[in-house]
Amino acid sequence: MLARLFLAAAALVVAGANAANARDLTIAARSEALGGVLTEAYLHPFSAVTDIGAVGSWWDGGLDTMREQLKAADNTWDLILVDSDELATGCAEGLFEKTDWAAVGGKDRYQAWAVADCGVGAMLTNIVLAWDKDKFPVAPSWSDFWDVAKYPGKRGLRKDVRGALEIALLADGVAPADIYKTLASKDGVDRAFQKLDQLRPYIVWWNNGAEAAKILGSGDVLMTSAPSGAIATAARLDNRNFGLQWTASLFDVLSWSVVKGSPNLRTAQQFVYFAGLPAIEARLIRQAGLVGPAKGLNEGLSPELLAISPSNPTNMATALRVDTVFWHDNQARLRQRFDAWLGK
Image (cartoon, rainbow, N blue to C red; front, side):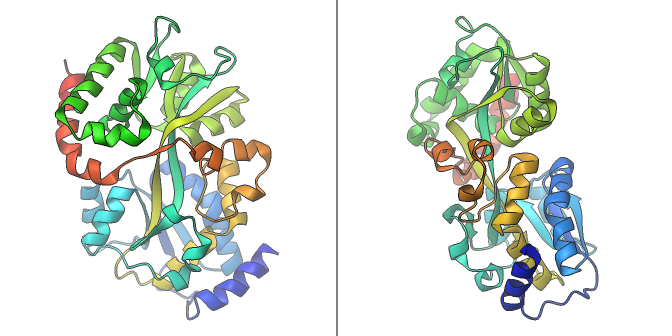
């Protein structure tokens, strides 16, 4: 049924796409782990339905890396998964094709957060407060995260100024709507670093979702900030009773962008359309606890999957979207201060 629906729609949406491309469609994911998930959830089904070859690559992100790769004479990437800053910069610098909404099914089939001039939202990424319910039965807050007197134990935090400052201010009582207004001033930044000072002796730093899940599962930390998908996946695979606190979580969007001048333009658009089908996106949340932008996706999920869906309206109600413009303008300066703070 899925194959018939897709092929009927694809004939209309991507008329003229030719399966006999000069080379396979190459899609660059954000990490090797995510690349594996996307291969199983998206690439293999896409190739099975369309008979179009599609292969995955991966990269760690970063504007310099993106520019170097996409401007290289031997670049083979056709479709790239980018964060909000990379999307805006790549679009401004002409590295991506403008979004042809007719070719990917129209704006109306996507959530508002998925719509951009040079990209289509692929998934939400969400940093939540995670904990082991067997050790800590009551859902903690960011304020509790800092209260090591009442709740003794180590805390996990990503080793990155982006996110650490927001969480520090949330723990200090700043409302989500006022976080970036506060960080826009020197006093606000000082306040965030002073809050981090309080927790510093108890912090176990992590660099990726797998590390966050590992330190929680091993008991190295009582609770940790973490990507929701990494914790949900670890809980499923290891049969653990991990909790996800969605209140005052941080979310951002990863988007599909077609590389400017790709010889596989039509095929890339066809893939984006396919990846936006609710039945296909459901594979992603089952495998990795991640959600795509299709309208109606949550309505078709089981209660168990709905509870871990970052785009569930209940989970999104108090979430804070990471301010890409703020970090584009301030990241270099604040990262330098953060690195100096770490080195003290």
